[in-house]
View 1 (cartoon, protein in one colour):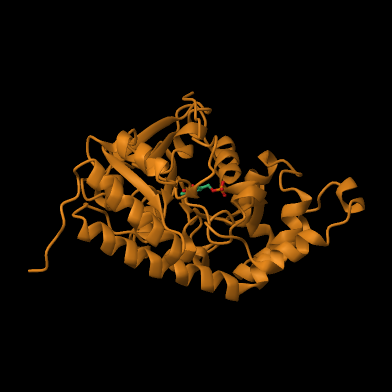
View 2 (tube, rainbow, N blue to C red):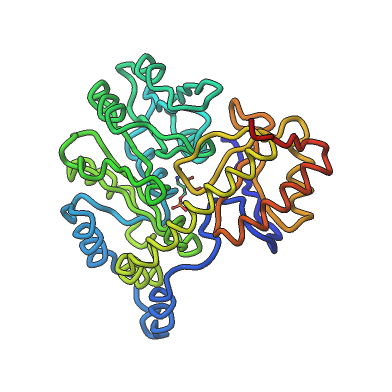
Length: 349
Ligand SMILES: Cc1ncc(COP(=O)(O)O)c(C=O)c1O
């Protein structure tokens, strides 16, 4: 297996490197945390009542939803449950790193389909790569690090062209995109959808995600899933997080406004970027990418070098936070580009 070392360490700066919420979770969640008693921590967590509540929130039956220790655990248990010797995992790349990491712990073969230079969803190439051995197709939608998205029609077509496989649609960045396949759970027999509370909800530290799918498929997943992997603090915070939709709407609105401003700043500086449907943007820095990341850090802004992702040499991913934070990031960007002699100001025609 490949080792995975997230570049955590000292992160005492503006953290635009992990696509987290850059501000805070809902105040209602903080209040719920304050109400947790020491006595309640002596008990093993009971996930079923909260699972039922989340299912109702999504318009699904409780048997169709499992809470997980982040989407990472959902990916892990799904791959453990379904991938064996002789099976294939079909992946468009570049994409979220953990698919490859968890698949490499199974005996399945990884079939990676490279996106073109525009980093759009490689739909036709994926269709052509389906074989009778394809067992899981994993699609982050929107995708990371590109920010691009597949359409609903493309995903439905993929599911129907690979009836022997599970189509996992990882909607970690759903709130910034607004399009979902959740309403097709139980309608398409091989569709599963994952969501996280780590991004828009601002709860990455609690480790909370969910996997939804047809009850027959979820039964296999539950055999592998630890009964206690979602802890009591996460379970206590989930209902108020779901309830406070106005906080979520405010945060998403703030990020979308900040993204438009920051994209304009990249354009003005002559930096190529890829259109994003999520809370981050991928920028072309070129051969000075490592120095760029280092100088941005020195200016108090952490960004993520994606150069080792397939087809991403010289590209850096920048998380979008609030407008105020992104104005600070844009100032650091311009300073850094000037220091590296990379700034090519664009003039209006
Ligand atoms: C596409 C995608 N899926 C899942 C995750 C991880 O989610 P979680 O924090 O719920 O494990 C990430 C995090 O960056 C991601 O980009």
